[in-house]
Image (cartoon, rainbow, N blue to C red; front, side, top):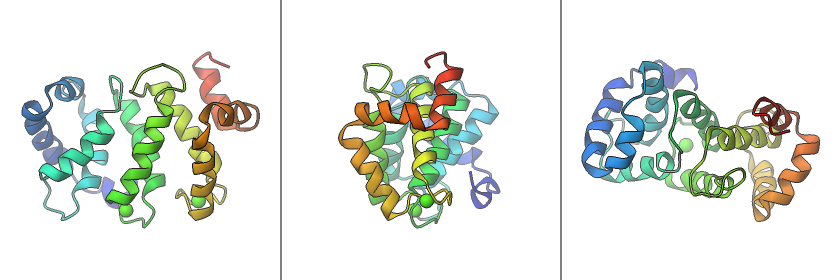
Length: 186
Ligand SMILES: [Ca+2]
Ligand SMILES: [Ca+2]
């Protein structure tokens, strides 16, 4: 999370978001409602990216966008949400701490592709999120924490065939090797 966002107290926005989600998407509400304060902070880091007019609350359209990310997570823990924040940082191409629709599209696409790299379902486990983050770190060749056009081009190429890309990555990406080692999957 960058400093600008972490300075803001996003807990009221999260509580507001959760209250409305209870009505709009009970399943997601159930998955997010038991987070501790740190988890809520991490959730705030995600939810806050969709408040484009800075109103400290998400309108229905913004909630829909947030759910396109959050709905992809399998039993999100605080740690999983922290990884999601780091992933989303790479997608904030204009570095304004917000996720615009065009930035979101790439996010949706990579989450979709990575939802099946370890488990055959539509959602991402903490391991799958960790694998995705490891790949993005590796693709960020100039280490500026943003995917620049050439780096995005490499990502798109990788997404064409994720499984064969990961095969190579397992051999040459130390971040990925570490994540898989920790999970006992190396
Ligand atoms: Ca942005
Ligand atoms: Ca970069």
